[in-house]
Length: 332
View: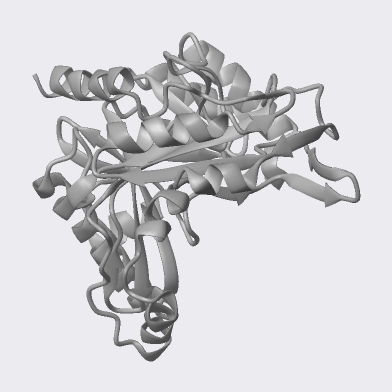
């Protein structure tokens, strides 16, 4: 993806290098005067990325972790990506693609840290929210449009390099003082962000899919509402001792409140629903405001019983205002 951006002069990329040996990596970091992000090349369930200033003390610790990634072929590849650390607020835009055109979805913001207050290990996502008008409290229409333009340019570049890409493009961005920067793409829906936006989809999904196949994709409509998703996980996740345990989910009570249940890493057995070691289920609610959706989602979480945990702060006024204040600080 980074190479594609270079070849087609697409905005929004970051300084990066890919290494398969420690010596070259160490020499690069010795000369690099910015904090970095370390990413295994392969898939690690959303748990492999480590950031200097967050999970790593300095670039020396980044060297040690990078060596661990290479030596253990973490994610299935004995390679590591080193990128400059982008400062700002992360957000996600997903889009339907027909190979030439894209139809973007409302923006959403994930919360990858395991525990309240944005602390703890990076996970696959502990919850997310979206706002009205497809934006976010810290994301302007102009910045949203810039991110969508980056995605459009990407799809056009792919079509020149290979077969036109038809499907879902998931763009994870960082809003920085220099505008939106792409952190990564995925060729799928976002988890948990898809749970925020798909319940708001007004255009029938089968029509969207047919338009993708036919290459006739046009604007896709969504309800103008906010939404909040909270993930229920085993206590201690991502390191948990409760895998295999039985939990109780009162679906009827949750749905009576106007919320939805989306099951994830659980198993249905004769005696009920059992946890795995990963995220169990998402509770999603929508409303006229983020606050309204959060209140419903939080209340609905009470109807899941067992050795489980969720981030109560996802979508709360205090955490949203923290995001807005952080972005103002970055811009100033």
